[in-house]
Image (tube, rainbow, N blue to C red):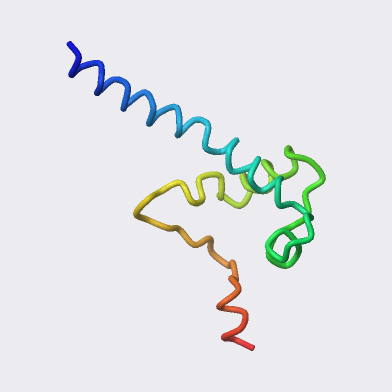
Length: 89
């Protein structure tokens, strides 16, 4: 019975983290939003007026699960990152 309990706790924790990850992502982005650091300012990050604005932007871009995987990373189509911008200039 204790073995079953440990498996159910692991599975429950996994599903709970899947459900709450978008909220964690949005809250982390809102913390750095327009904070004065380069990573929180345009062109690296857009300015959001509220957490709902951030949520809808991520949803529209298909980025609600970005950074969620330990092994696989998705690069959104059409995005330029810091190292790409410097290389192409």
